[in-house]
Image (tube, rainbow, N blue to C red):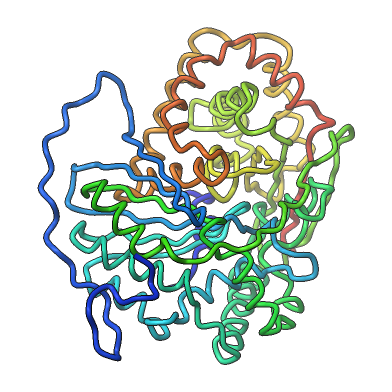
Length: 473
């Protein structure tokens, strides 16, 4: 597992309408019994890589994305709520993450932790995570359990068990997670949690996303109930279903279980804009648990969806992605300044599944005998090559192929979750999940000239923040 994926894992949780039961039932409610999957006709291969996309909206505002893939008898269900780390209220840092945990504490018809037991008993796996602009919950299970999954997800969207007992318990769990994963872990905040706070000016982009312990422990029951009623509503959510299922039948089930869940008044999104950074920022921190120094550099990204945004994806592959990248060849192979170079556009996901401002981050560990200035000089040498002259045709073509390949890997990851993730993100942020099929075209439009212009503007020294981490002697 790469360092970036390891950091992403830290953000994951540990682990008709629902008003009427899924079927006639006595007083003790039961989820619907899984039925045999519906046989499907063979799908002829397309001439180019295309993901089937059906997009619907329920009357209550729920965005529904269906993508049939009969390759395996499984189904991935993802429910994405438009509330994430940087959208949470002021003075309540960590609320988005706290609520991720609360969603597993029981609902109207499922007791505490019974959601997890239900999915696992049906041969499935599940998890949740809090990201910059959304909180998501997903299940991957045999396709004949689709109705069961939809019933259970609708049940907790309709009526989560927000009680003092559950809140007190989960405040303790989240506080302990912060201590274990950040405060008492070597490099626990580096650079995914440190860098946004240093590079950004806007509070929403620059506060402690994982949660200040004081804010978490001060959370009150009425505040948590209000948070749920405001943000965990169908008109603030997207539901994606990917796998071996019948789309008309699935849509009918979604309407049955989610259709009568009431809308909510969703407050306007906060202003997330960042001023243009004109001057380089530098910051140093001491990590008492670290054994080796570390260095990270972050550049503000172009706006998501612009040609320059896609060009930065190509630049990442040229500069700092893989053993053939400029920085790996220079810092590792030729100079021996580090053993590896890590990079990311979006430390908690990929370059498509976010909405607000973003950073392109490069990070590495190094020996105490190598100074940050020595490493920065070597990095600057390679960056300036990209800012002063067009990249050669061979390097450019290789980077484009790598970016396309990485896109396929993202879409194909984790038994349908990769597709569900991007479909839900495009539905939630752009109201257009079919954009997933435009990614290849966007990459194909990038030219060496656009890469050069993008590097000149976005890889300039004044647009970056440098963080040096000093290990405890």
